[in-house]
Length: 220
Image (cartoon, rainbow, N blue to C red; front, side, top):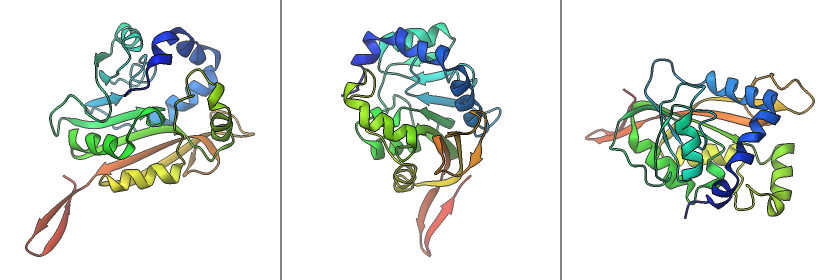
């Protein structure tokens, strides 16, 4: 079951966070922008109110909350109702898929990544942005989630766990960036993970074909 009740009731409050935390929002946008391929057909899974899809030039999104979808459509994003574990698209139709702070709300992370793998073209890429559970902010969210309007039903993941789920679905990690580093300017972006509260991972769809001489990898 999609965890949308809080977003249906409090969509305005959700959007207000971005207005109240402009520097943090700008840092998250920038780290994602550095990973998104140019001139490519993209999809955002869990597009919410379009606060990432719209400024990043992504025209299509999937979102189960109608209240959030209405806001995204007003920002110029075409929203199709659906959930991450069962994407309403045929195979091999997108160059990249974006997910931002959505993984913590899905029912099945591996099935989600497998569905994204399915709808990506050969050598297509997934870009996933999330709050690292092992970061200071991630620990705060985890410890206070029972009283949080939006995160009470969330399952937070460490960067290592996200990488393992991606690899299990057939992806190859190609780039990891981090930002919102404690004690540093919000605009600072570093490679890897372990210091930043917000982590963005890019991974490539690798198709493994079984032939007479074993398994061969095909990227494009």
